[in-house]
Length: 185
Image (cartoon, rainbow, N blue to C red; front, side, top):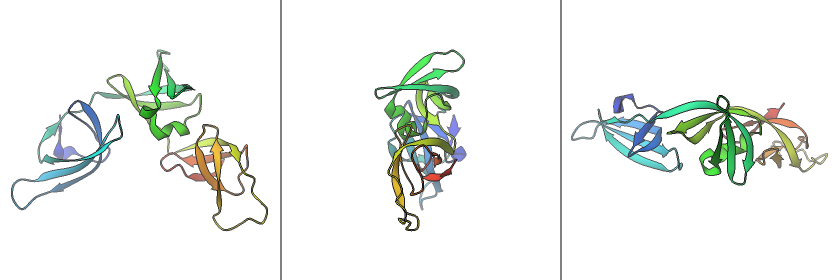
């Protein structure tokens, strides 16, 4: 059991049998009555965000979660197929469970995945990844307005705005939190 005094950003809790991650929290004392904790929670299976207020000292369940390393093998329709590196067991995961992070994972990459009751509900990525540009328009000479960008498609299908000097075949670093171009490899 986790007490409200132990709440912090990023903490995972379970409410009504569903896993939530604390996005924000704030302790406050209304004019009348005991102290309270106001939270903003993200449901980890659907991504839905909700506001919930707890009484100070209230206890909530700790979810049955584990982190394990898996290798991303391939994509099958809308599903991502991961392989457990210890048992070689394959897991077909709906794209909704992987979320937007799916655009940063290349075939053969080893990633840390978050399992809740044996079901994959999230992928933990490094802060940035290197991806190859597969399609972009050529930069036109003399078209050098400061900070001008153009759209580019990565090998995973992800679309990123890149500077004009980036060409097809270049390998670039992309921030996995914002999806922004960081630099050339």
